[in-house]
Image 1 (cartoon, one colour):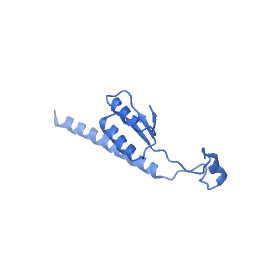
Image 2 (cartoon, rainbow, N blue to C red; image 1 turned 30 degrees about the horizontal axis):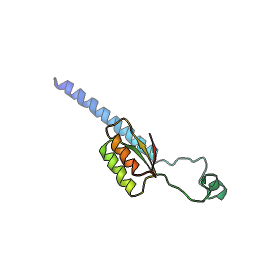
Image 3 (cartoon, helix red, strand yellow; image 1 turned 90 degrees about the vertical axis):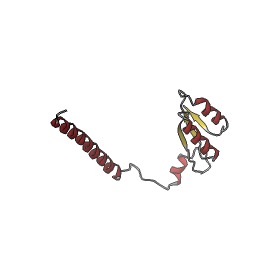
Image 4 (tube, rainbow, N blue to C red; image 1 turned 45 degrees about the vertical axis):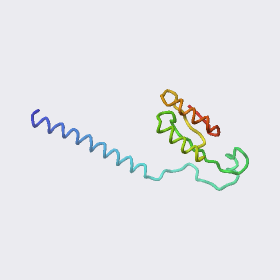
Length: 116
């Protein structure tokens, strides 16, 4: 390959890299900007009651794990977190070779909601 061609290919790669770096920086700058909120957070009890589905005044946190059944490592992570009682819902991948293992683990944790 002639020396000029190598230089042009190197320049193209450099330009692509620089363009990607600039786009990344612009994205980070944009993400850091404060966004205008249509309605500020309110401590108004009437507004809070509207989202209190169980009428008990408690705040609930749903912790959802994605894509168990994808691989053995994802299944092991689910099992560890579920044994600690820190997960409330999961999504299950059904077209993988690790589905059976995930189903067996889910049977041991009936308190966890499952979606596909």
